[in-house]
Image (cartoon, rainbow, N blue to C red; front, side, top):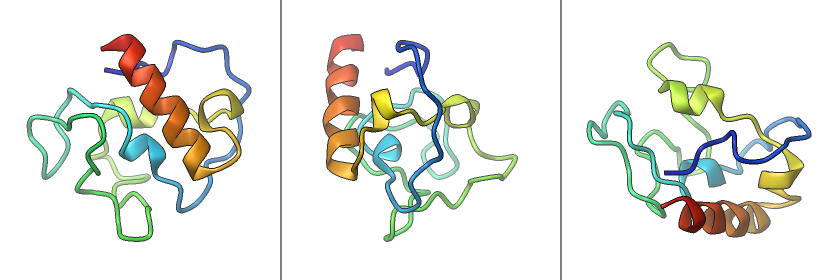
Length: 94
């Protein structure tokens, strides 16, 4: 599973509608609707069709998601770049 603490970060604001962090990495903790977590490369059930988290700012949102901070090092400058980086990090930490 990818841990958000692997890279020194330069914080940035999350790109609305990106959702790469809800697709590329595995999540081992329970997510509402996914009690066993989710495998890498699988969309979280809480991700809408326009790639927005339905649990954002909701107390039911898993702590691993709350702790993930977007950064240019991880998220890059586009959805495609974020997917590439997060997929590679997932492979390196599996």
